[in-house]
Each structure stands twice: as C-alpha cells, then as structure tokens.
Image (spheres, rainbow, N blue to C red):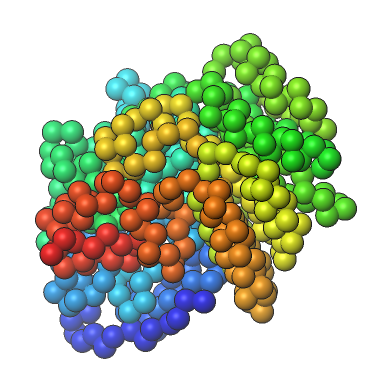
Length: 457
C-alpha cells in the first residue's frame, strides 16, 4: 500500500502568487476538487501532493515546473491516470493534472494529428477515425496517450504500423529549466530519441504530433478453447504469435471456466484485407475453439471493448515479463496459478509484440525490446482492501515461479511502484544513453515520479 506523506509547508503567499499567474486552477489539500484530482484508476495509490495544478496550456506547465524547481518539489504528471504504479501522483510534490488538455487537431491531407497531453486513447481515436485514419495506441480506450506513448505503447496495430512511440514525429516538452522545446528528427534530436520509450524522465510533454495511417473497419473478436485443450493451445500460441502476419495482432488470456478449470482465449484484430483473414487464422481454428466470434467491427468500438475490465476504484497489483516460449514446465506453472487466483477480477494476459514493432532497431528509439515476443502480464485486481495481502502474494509468487522461463527485459509501462530495481531491464542497452541525456535536461532529477532513470553524475 502506498504510504501517505504529509505535504511540505509551502508559504501561502507564494502559492497565491503562483495561482494568480496561472490561467488554470491551483488546488491545495483543503480545496474542493483536490481529492478528485489525485484519484487514479488504481485504488492502492493514496498519495497526497503538496499542491495540484490543472494547467490550461503549455505556459501554465512552464510556470509550474519553474515553481517546483525553485521550491525543490518533485513533479508528477497525470494524463489519463492509468499507470498501475501511480506515477501520476507524487507524495508531497507538485502534481500536474493535465487531464483537461484533450485538444486533438487532425490534418487528414498530411496524415498527422496533434494531441494534447491529457487526451485519452478514445479522444485521439475518435478524432482520427472521423477521417478514416488512426495511429497505433494501446488496448484500453480510457488510457492516457501521454504515459502510454512515452513508455512505448503496444496495441492492436503494432504488427502493421509499430508502437505508439514509433509514430511520434514531433512533440513539445517543458524541461526542468522551464524551457518549452520542440523535439523532432531535426530539433533536439537527443531528447526526441529519449521520449520515444524513455518514459516521463525528461520533462513534461505538452503535445504529441503523430503519423496517421488509413484504418477502416477491422475484423476483431476472439477465440475460446475447451479446458481439455488448454495445455496444447498454450504451447502452440507463442510459436504462432511470432510468425503470424503483420496484419494480425493478438492478446491472449488464461481464465477459468465454471468448474474452475483453466481455459485459454485469444482476442484479435485483423487490419488487412478481409478475404485474407481465413488463411491467417486457420492454424488457430484448426485447434477447435468452442467459441469463434470474429466480425467486422468499427475500430473505435474495438479499442474500447476491454474497458470494462479496468473499472475505477479497484485495487491493482501487476507483474510482467516478456516471454518467447512456453515449455511444459512453464505451462504447468501457468495452469497452477490460474487455478489458484484469489480474485475473479484478476487476469493473466499475453500481449503480442511483433511485425513492424519488432523490426525496428533496438537503438533507434529508447524502447529496446525489438523482437517478436509476448508480454506475460499478471493482473491482480480486487475490491476489498482487506484482501490486499492475499492478492499481492499471489501475483508475486506467480511472477517468481515464471522467472526461469522469462526472457530478458520488461515493458516499462507495466512496472509496479516497488520495482525500481528492474528499470535497467526496462531499457536494456539504451539505459546509459538515457542516463546521459537525463543529466543534460534534468540534472537534479526533478522528474523522478516515474520508473526513474538517474542522471549520470
């Protein structure tokens, strides 16, 4: 459980001066709206910032960052508030609640979109789909684009069009010294490289410019297999996932049937020609699913199809690793812990990274995990705080039991709050370069409410 830290004493007159300089709102702990602003989707996180600022734009963010630096307050940034570690909320620091900065501008002729830091996936998807376009994002529409993109961004179009960060062609960012910079392949190229996968370590991104692609209706849905074939399908799935067509992106899951037996399912999105899906899916269909529902679907509808699995107010504790193969022993571990789940709300997911996303050179962006693989995601979720210890223990024990079968590396967006020792694994060979860039743009580590990269001294 996150421990509350009392806010530091700030001179009320100094806060009044900052408030008058802002176009947006400044919230103190005693103000109406403060508690709502510090809430995020994970109820395990209950931190109290010293002050919350709801910026109206980049200038408000610039003023807030300068204030935080001068008053030695760590800065945290809330976009969608969907990070499981609760990075959006800093205990005793200055929190920027950017959730009001949702503006999206689409230039359909140039196939680009400029989106504010508070936009959700749903905001960007709806704006771009009005023109028959989209950019790769995530898989839950209530996620914020900022945190998702800064950490990489694995979603339903990654096989065909890459990660979210691969499609950022420019961004505006406020750095620790209060400058508002434009980063792109031609400007501040080191920082442009770092924000595409390096998380929120380098400043506050106020807007992203994305490359767009033609995306119409997709073929989407899922396959569900009988419990007696779970072992067989689990062994086959990862082998199939690393070699399937780019147009087919999948996210598998392991749940339990009414009798408590583990069952395997695959959610999928096909973004290619409709008449080519049958041959692409034939290997999975030959395994005899009991449920086979893959139908033409509006892209925005598919993007939001899994939102109900992440309701506000539940407690969440996640652990993850990349995997490339399931041995018989690994399958036995998966089946054991699936049957032992203490909460029906918990899940076991396998999100696929492949195709275009896997063919980018590991050093081309800060996101280094460029090979066909799946992310094994252990999602412990529960409602009653009294059940916290039991559910956290299940996730931790499960994770440790799977480590002999895990690949190196971890997806930074799914690291928990206590996993700072795994940050190097999240950035791999890119870590030292990121630390050097951090030293240039944030030498005092003002932006440390994240999976932190420490500046090289």
